[in-house]
Image 1 (cartoon, one colour):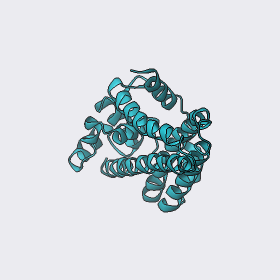
Image 2 (cartoon, rainbow, N blue to C red; image 1 turned 60 degrees about the vertical axis):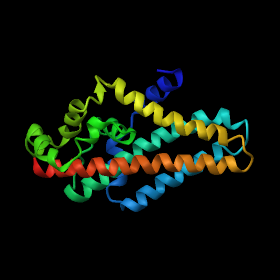
Image 3 (cartoon, rainbow, N blue to C red; image 1 turned 180 degrees about the vertical axis):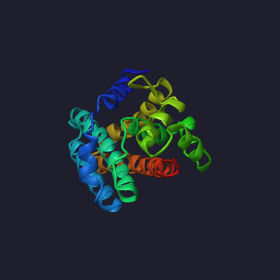
Image 4 (cartoon, rainbow, N blue to C red; image 1 turned 135 degrees about the vertical axis):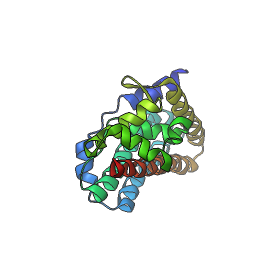
Length: 213
């Protein structure tokens, strides 16, 4: 794995989102309001970081770290809204965001688990309503998402590759006067929107499992 790929994976693994705080903040909001708020934050950050050609290379690192943090907050917030609206309770887990990253990065093992035919199987494994906070862990183990507290090699490689391809375009675009800001903001918008879509799919599946357990 390249140094950049290692940095991307390490940055994601170092995130410590306050899940309880995110649930309190997000669960009563509408899905559209929550997504628009997250999109506005990262679009503005990306545009500002790429506003000045050449200097943008020095500001990209902080912007990427901010983007990663907002991706995790956005994802957990979507879970809070889906779970809070349907069940009036917090069913967020530490393993949820790694699972969502795996979905977002196109990991086939996890992607194939999020199907209607797997709902009953996973519900049986977690066993009962109290198992709602074990669903994410069950998916992470079965899908090979994590190795201990770290992303597995296969997921790390996919996540790093997806990040690298977009950030390369962002770095190159930042050299273009006036256009760089639009490119930087647009790429950040793509990141937050695509992770939100992955989170929405993941948590709707998780809700079905929780209802079946």
